[in-house]
Image (cartoon, rainbow, N blue to C red):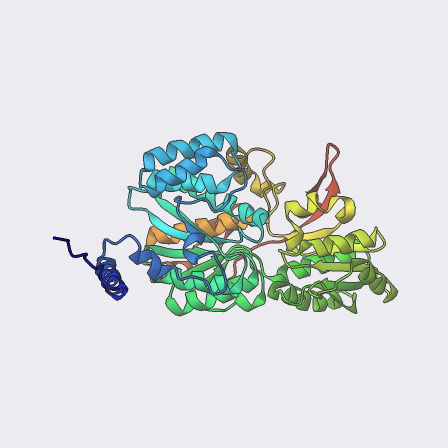
Length: 471
């Protein structure tokens, strides 16, 4: 007798079974996700994806579990981040120490080493927001100051962890970063951002949510009196503009001065607005040539010809920190025809390296310089940590100052509101990188400005020399 063939179920049955299985899996994941122990719950709630960008905000944050800086890569640093992510902090320390023997001037690795050292000791946590993705040199200059302060504080028994955040000096990212940080109850304060546009975007969120922000490098006047949670350790534009106006009129003996600035950068706009009246008050003349680094078709040679034909004897260069190449182009076209002045933005290794001799002789104001007598104690430790060749700029000094201020406040009151109250105390004095300082009611700090000049190094390259009477 023949066997009757068995028919397979129709395709719709398989489709329904698959759909039911998928629904059950999602339901299980949903229940599991709501459990406090689910590893992704906190991350997703804190770090939403930035619109229009492939990189999620979550990947911009690290205490040591990922490398944000891939320059000077070592296998030991990579292994250290893997160990840190698994909470094997002793092993992570060993790997980070090994990596530092190869690249001792890597501040990210130094911070991760410090973080691992205190990870099991109920540390206080502070975020450091730097522009790794848009200006690595500046980011590392800032992180060296933060890492140096952290290293000193840990030796003194202060258990401080630094969460590094990459905001690329981007206003959208800075705002998203701020919204994530204020939700994290473990983060008690913020150091950053770098550029004024990013700091202004973040400051709104920090002020509204009651978290202290100290920017070490933003100088726009818009941050003065912004709110009782907003501070800075950088000088104001007015202080630096006064020093530069004094120099050009009374020392360089040039009265007719033009300005080329970035109209899209708040700190450069306010520097221009501060410099013009300071120049006029000292007997100088402002030569208005409408020179704007933000112009899409900016041409250095054409700009120099226009400025000279307008009667200018000197020109102030005020570029955005992430667009220094246009200032270099203008300086190259100038070819010593006019005296060159600059803003604090030019005080970076890119100018002495990429600028070559084109910016030789440019004078600019800074709040800190490694040759200052008052900075030598700071520099002794800096050389021990980073070596003699590591770029130590004013951003390093003011970032150190911001870290010291936050730590001092948190040692007295380790709450967000308490920290604000401590920093607002006019009697609070902080030992900074080159002097003691206090915060003013505006959130600004007491500070003196020095002048530096780009000069040729007898051995090789160029460097920033401290001008006489700038101690």
